[in-house]
Structure formats: C-alpha cells, structure tokens
Length: 212
Image 1 (tube, rainbow, N blue to C red):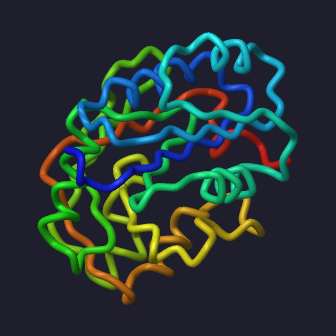
Image 2 (image 1 turned 60 degrees about the horizontal axis):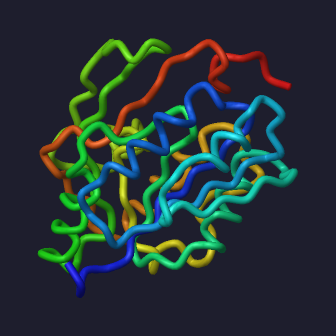
C-alpha cells in the first residue's frame, strides 16, 4: 500500500509492564505496514522500560520520562507522531484483529468526508478471557454520542480534526468522552463492522482505583 496514509498509534503508559507486551504485539501484528507506534511512558519502575527496550519492531518509537499524567502523555505522543490517521490504545489495551488498522484506513480512503471510524470491542479480563462483546451501532446520534456507543481502543481519527491536541490535559478521567463530544458535529462518524480493539478490565485500571 505505497500510497496509503501513515497511521500513528499512540500509547500512554505507566507501570503497566504486565500488559504492555500484549499491546505492543497487537500493533506489530497488524497487516497494514505504513504505521508507527508511539509510546510515551511516564517513568515506569516496574520493568516497562525493559519491555520496550527488548521489543523488536522498527515501527515502535518510545520515550520514558516523567509527565503530568495520561492526558499529557497522549498529547506528547501526538506531537511526536507524523501520521494522517491517529489511533489511541492504552498500555493495557490493544487490537483484536490484525486487519483492524487496514479496515479503518480503507474506510477513510473510500470516504473522504468521514473523520472518525470506529468498530466493535472485546471486553477482556486480566487473563485475556473474553467477558463481553461490546457491539457498536452503525450510526451515531447526539444522544448516543454523549453516551459513547463505542470504546476508545476501537476508534481512529483524522489528524486534521485534532488541532494540535488529542485530549484536554485538565481531565484525569473521561478525556475520551470529552474528545468524542468535541468531534461530534464537526465531522462524520462511520462504523467498520469488525472487532477492532480490546478493552481490559484489570485490578490496577485507573478507573477502578481510588482517585489520587
């Protein structure tokens, strides 16, 4: 696909070594070659840096340094990336299907007026067991966009819509919901009828830990 756009997959990470290898492998396994994987690690001390150092894929680019949290890491990753299309998978999430990126790109290429592509998601646990299939509806309305009918690991966005930042750095939670609300009304959303990403429910997930 020599003329197909570069895709940048952004991953914020902090002390997620146990899950990071699945994340990296899920991107490396994609059958779409024109991509880069940008990982910004917040200075992990759990072996994450060793995982990143040992992973063999020239498309992986990573940095480990202190940051101001997940939202800051995401925006730094966006700034360091070059792709026309942006994907976002946290370090404990990843892609289910090796065709995920290619399917999203094909949708963008075939439909130049579409700005956001999303698909279905697998909800999995710490042992990679499937808990639920999170089916995404084929259309997005103002009501269900607010309620988020899709999951963040299964979404791709045209870079031109982001205006230099992916998420609001003042938000420690729900920064993805805020992003969808910002994008709704400015572009068309389209579904790819494919299981795209997996969302991992695990004990150290930020959304289940007490707020710091």
